[in-house]
Length: 325
Image (cartoon, rainbow, N blue to C red):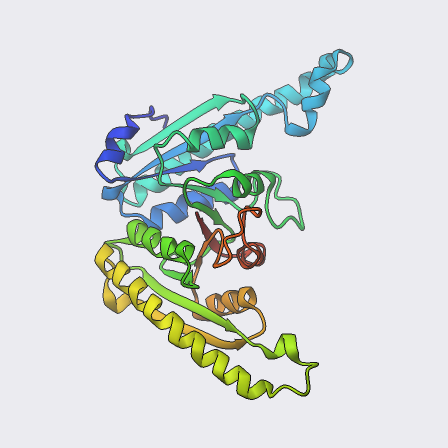
């Protein structure tokens, strides 16, 4: 099923959520399609399946430039043609998945183009046309090499897609429970706004989760300091500071259309690792999606992603992770 690309900007004006899903024929990209089909309301969403066709695998690009090897690449090009057919079949399957989830055919578009600059950069160029609300990719692509935490395309998108949320799908995550890693920063408030926009009028459960690190981990060698008393004061001060921000976040979700009974809040205290605690809480609570800001309170511009967010991203192999800018 090949559906032509429709007028995108008209949908943006109607506040329709339009997402871009790069498809490469892999199982993980189809999992990304299923994820989108499960979390978005068909009447409020449009999906563009996007494929960048390369005549040769990336590892052969340099050989193609060398006249001595160019004539020897015919078998590889034949393989690439077969792969193109595989992707075309995968797009048809993806469209059927979304239609079975209730999406009308006119809400779906497919777009295939030849490689212009590079696969990741071509995806970025398409994403940055101003026509999309989010990009959804599989954690790994067609190669799915053992031991690889993030595929090369996902890695490049994390570093360069700064205008909209990037949603990275690992494993087969629960699509009904969402955990927002919340620290009160502008970035985490933007996570709340994004969750409200993407999940409004759905039956999704959303937890606003804040982690307070233990002071004792860093000061355990300072025996002359009353760590327990300082720890207690530190925890109480942080709870007092974060509670109003969490209440504001809850109000934003309710205002966006999230059912108040589906919203919960949790403050985890005396934890050694923020990232580890978020992962553990998501796993224990059955949350399939973790929503986090690209940067936290420090918002250091020299780094394209904050330290805690980077750790969560690399640890969350079986989760969906939203990186919100």
